[in-house]
Length: 360
Image (cartoon, rainbow, N blue to C red; front, side, top):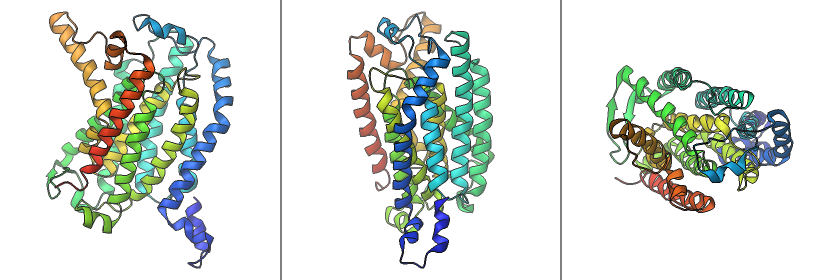
């Protein structure tokens, strides 16, 4: 919204700063961060009062988690509120990629909110049925996939771009929509599975968002794309503002989610943020790079898939418990040890993902 202040600029005054994506991204970051610090504690108090016993803890999970009984959930509301305010304030409202990403983020957030509400209101770990969540997610992702495809430049519509092989495009035609559905829904659910320890999901989400934000800024500038030899997608630079707001809101949330957590993100946050990462990857034509940048989420999801399939076939388990972070808990790793090591892995994967911009 503040971009429109440039209408009052003569080219050499304060208002001219609002033309620059980097300036507005900085503004979005600090807006979301301050929002989180100001409203974090009041929101947690409201959630604690309304939820009573807080998020139900799985009885078949690690016994060390039982001490977390009573911790309120739906903390994702703090991130999503800060993200929305900062994005609407600092991003351009005439940019379709911003609206596509907001649509996916808050649609998945509503699914997660319904799931969290069902859990706390019924005091059970069973929320909205998985098939319903999955089906709604596919519909949202399908709409976003088609929307993104028609606003992409003509030469990139319904095409899959490959990292490293910069000149290669695969024309999927309408099959690109099911592919996008898998990307977005898979990303949302992978982040959701990762959110099992205090602070475990939010930092890798911020790292991945920061990486995708840099990519969005780069592919949205013709001079950068010519130097890096990647496909130019005009308009995606505005997503840098969205990711800056996400990081600011995420840090505000992490202040209260650091061990021992005063609030859990819940499905409200994890599904929304995972969907956001998928939407940004689709908008920037970097769906494959998302699998690298978000490699930690991929491993968490694969550990569950492998565990379930292997158990159905043999009656035995590959891991002591899935997702894989619980496996390491059973191996004797302390929770902060797992969280910090997984953060390190996320950072390494993000750097590898960024390297694909230049590698050829």
